[in-house]
Image 1 (cartoon, one colour):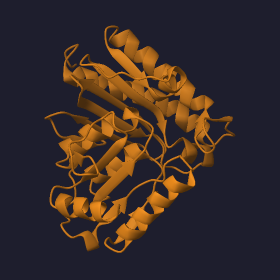
Image 2 (cartoon, helix red, strand yellow):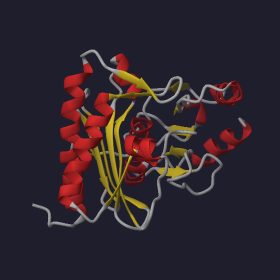
Image 3 (spheres, helix red, strand yellow):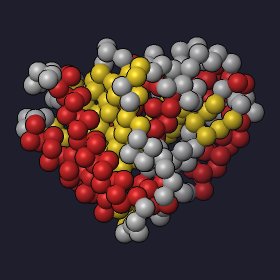
Image 4 (spheres, one colour):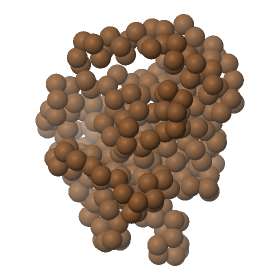
Length: 270
């Protein structure tokens, strides 16, 4: 047993919480969903709310003095403030649209920041039964086996992942599709799985070589994935090439060999 209050203990409890939420997701996945709209295309389900409640109740019981930030509570309160305190940052279902459609790229994402630094990360896809875990400084794992980023160094042979944000204003969509258009001439192919957290895990285990996203929901999309990528030997940064800021709603990730070429291609695509 990990010592109470150690990073190993934090990880073990995050895994327990993710698996509890995963059970709920799995049992609801093939049933009819009751769906509400946050925006025109941004969906939230009863399962999102139920999963967040289960995770929060469990973590509050274990660590009453830790702070909690969740996607659904943040949506209700409208503000999030990340402090230096140990803070659990939770996305109860990343890929809600996939969940609603029965498309299997769905996950629970639980990250812990200490001093604002992503320190523990758990991303669990209960449909494919894939559990990604990492502790800062201790490596990244998929179902308990070590993972590492790809060693691809050429853009033209690289698989690029991105997503279309929920915002459907014409100017925003045009900017997104123009950028994709420009990048498509430089890479092997493009993937959109519908889950930012799983896109980051895809970088960590070498399925994707590069990933970027601008204008996603909030830190709950990236808190766990950022530590998993870093621990798998990857880099997480701002699409401009500047340092990654967990609260900025802008993220890019790649293996170290392709980072410079990727940033250059991103700059040229603006």
